[in-house]
Length: 209
Image 1 (tube, helix red, strand yellow):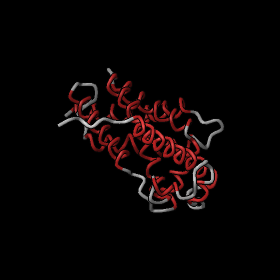
Image 2 (tube, helix red, strand yellow; image 1 turned 180 degrees about the horizontal axis):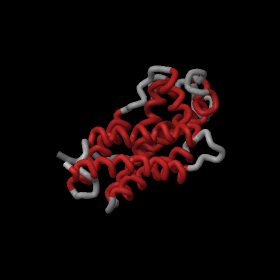
Image 3 (cartoon, one colour; image 1 turned 180 degrees about the vertical axis):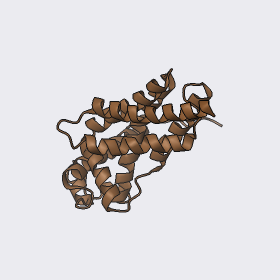
Image 4 (tube, helix red, strand yellow; image 1 turned 120 degrees about the vertical axis):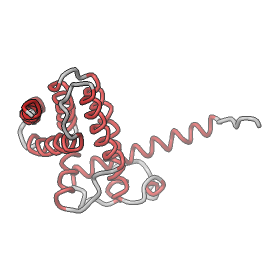
């Protein structure tokens, strides 16, 4: 059977779809940051683009759908950077500090959208743990398991350590963005020392045992 040929017309159509989808995502980021999730409607988003009013529904089902897509896009941008830091780590401090510094730098650059996510998680029961966000948590857990196996981290519970790192990262980021200007370096140093102090105590306890 002959292989179907992709025509330039099909390529052009797919490229246009990708451009339109990204234009809607970019507009949604701006509107969510300006108005907040609750006050935003689909008309506000599409009004920030050059697209027709019905075009939105060719790509997204609802306001919640595009919000979820933004969270997934954020996770897809951040996850490779975090993994690269963890994989290259040769010590506990490098493993912990590299991830925190990367995360806090990203939050500082995406401050307005982070505020939207934070406010939504506080005031409205919305799914902020999307498939890509959850995949990022699982990557962290697997990298912890690998680091324990390589002797970089002490033999602690990977799930608990993953939850501790993720929880500290999110809560410290909440405080960091309230400072003027935000201080990613200071936030990373504080969070790193907090985790390292706990791991040091646990390693000492395991050695005593």
